[in-house]
Length: 321
Image 1 (cartoon, rainbow, N blue to C red):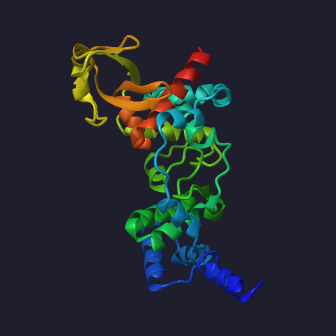
Image 2: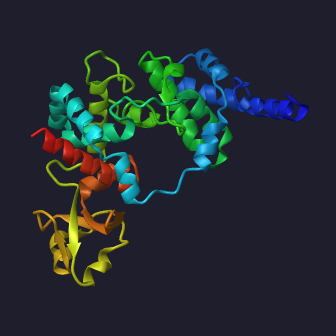
Image 3: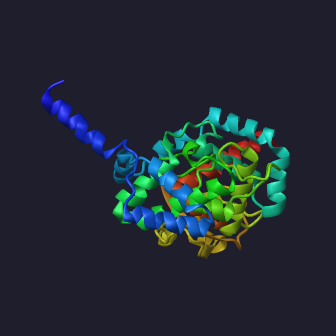
């Protein structure tokens, strides 16, 4: 190896891969975690000595790809294998899904669909150690440092309370963890124990993941029995005034129908919704989206994400009737 390459390797290795060096900032953070989580400060400092900076997480945060069009996004989530795996997963947890619906009122098919989109029902292998990803973003990504410090703190407290080794927990590059890809603060707020073992474990427990997703959706305003979205056909131009008005439900279906929008299936004309446009295989598609669709976007703010969950859930529902 020539001197230039050797120097380059040493420089790269010096900024990623080494355990963290305790600084006054880290020590102050450790004290906060210890007090808030009622954990030994020595234990927290021990964890922080083991974390490693992972610059790939910063690179991926800065290189988040521009969103694909719906016609290119949809095939990643709506296909026979994923639908069939969803049917299988639903068949494994009938009592748990029924319990979640009874307590939270959430459609079981949507819960299953979220797990399908997020981690392929828990089968997707996450690449990053959650501790490393969150530490890196908390202390070396200034734009959102405070947010990621809260998430790192929550991960440590969650791990301690549930007797989990935080270094065994894998995440996305942004620190989302477990089968449902919760940020750690959301585990603290919405994580529930559904498996009967006394621990909230969304990493290995399908039951806890089901309960936690249902609780999350319920907590963000899910309305039992209401639809998520309906595809519509257009006539004339008056309907265009409803475009680009956001996705918070504002207008009744009846109002939009009078302006030239025709739903592709029966829907309560008194329900309020909003109109969204996506680019499908045959050109623009228009959908009226309702409160429960908006709730799914609280899980992930992408309209295309919520639409994929909606359609995957409907496929699973049809195949399990």
